[in-house]
Amino acid sequence: MQQFMKTQVMKTQVCIIGAGPAGLLLGHLLRAEGVDCVVLEARKPDYVRSRIRAGVLENITVSLMERLGLDARLKTEGLPHDGFNLADGERLIRIDIADLVGQNVCVYGQTEITADLMDAAEDRGLQVNYEAESVALHDVGGDAPYVTYTQGGVEQRVDCRFIAGCDGFHGPSRKAIPASVAQEFELVYPFGWLGILADVPPCNHELIYANHERGFALASMRSATRSRYYIDVPLTERIEDWSDDRVWDELAVRLGPEAAAKITRGPALEKSIAPLRSYVFAPMRHGSLLLCGDAAHIVPPTGAKGLNLAASDVHYACAALVGYFRSADNDGIAAYSNKALARVWKSERFSWTLTKLMHRFPGDGPFERAMQVAELDYIASSRAAQTSIAENYVGLPV
Ligand code: APR
Ligand code: PHB
Image 1 (tube, helix red, strand yellow):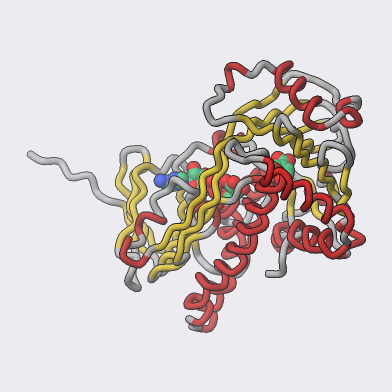
Image 2: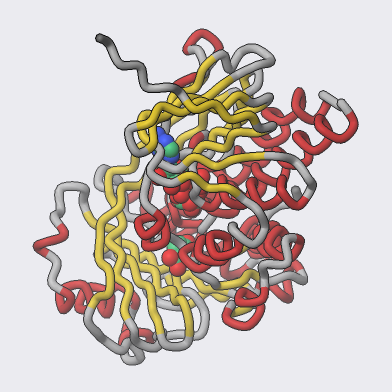
């Protein structure tokens, strides 16, 4: 006799796929507005919690955490930064963002944002189903999409009005949009960033992005006692070949003697190499599926825009969904893709420009280098150029 395992069916207004920052933020915002939703996440909570990512927040990200009343730790532990520095081998060019555009950024790890959102989920009635396997999207082109997955061996189905694809670059959501309507734009860079996290005081109170003849370096931080540094390396490098000492030696050379004198070395809490990519997928909505965050776009980390772009997508998506459920207003849904993409492209442009300016590309010759020198010289001497960098760094208006 054949045995049938019954599929468990759940109904909700919005099924969110992925519990990264995009999915968790959207879930919390929708719950706060009284919209029903459920979040499906492939991984275990500990895995989601332990991912180390960037740590510079624009106003949009801070303001969404404020709106949710989940900014208590961010307020006490986040470090407001009024400026950052570009090092060109000889000097530090300080971009005084507070003076130039009257705003600042907040240094607070994405890991902490994720923890704050995860910790508040139960209290706020946000249902997150972890270890959801084989998540698949169905009928996204129509008005009654659904999502299937298995959990603990039991088949599950979520019937919903909308699906929010917040499942990062490798998730299934983007692939559910038919190739016939999709466009992809991609640039893969010929290097990766080797990052090291250590419990040592930062070498400088502000970030330093350095373009040195040996390559790029970034001095960043998580707190007064935890530092985050990066160098660029060829994609052929293996992390096993980079002892902590080798990384510290390279950082000291690339960041220049003044910063090097203030570097405190310590054992790596985390060390890894991440490739760099610029990627945009359009449209960001198809029928009842809205894409948010890395599911739709990737930026190289040079401008620290990844998390912040996910936050601005979520801001637009939340407004569109709330408009739909509260007032039967479809305009926000119809406008979502164009609205989100307009901001995405500007962040892509900024991240790409800063990446080109601050890295030594393998094929580049004397002309390309002269362009970098001229541009850095221009930035050093022009308030207008610095203002342009500052307004992009703090985040363009949403
Ligand atoms: N089913 C369910 N969940 C999935 C699936 C799947 N098949 N595939 C991926 N996911 C989950 C991932 O495990 C992850 O938790 O989707 C989540 C996507 O999270 P992120 O990759 O962090 O993407 P996003 O939330 O858009 O965050 C954008 O975070 O990833 C960084 O660089 C990125 O800073 C940027 C920001
Ligand atoms: C980080 O602190 O991890 C960081 C900061 C700035 C960047 C990228 C990463 O541009």
